[in-house]
Amino acid sequence: MAAIALLGLAACGDTVPEQALLGGGAGAVTGAVVGGSVVTGAAVGAAGNVIYCQAYPGRC
Image (cartoon, rainbow, N blue to C red; front, side, top):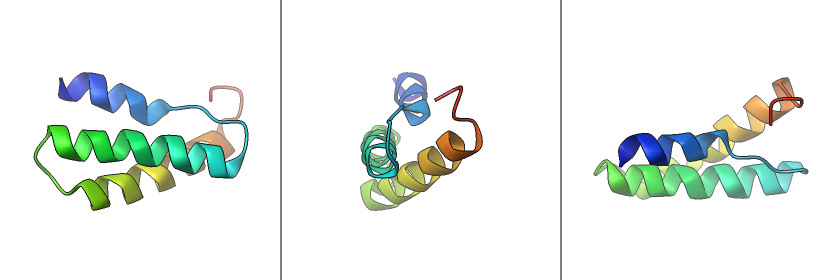
C-alpha cells in the first residue's frame, strides 16, 4: 500500500500550482498510509513534486 502511495509522488501537473497540489495530495496520502504526519507529508510531497517537475519537465 505504501509503495502505491509513493508512486503518486511522481505526480504530474502542467503549472507550478497544479504540481504543488498533486504532489501535496500524494504526500498527504502517503503520510496517512505509513502512519506519519499528513501535514508534513503534504508539504514534502508538494515541494518534492514541484522541484522534480521543474528539474525534469520531460519526465513529469
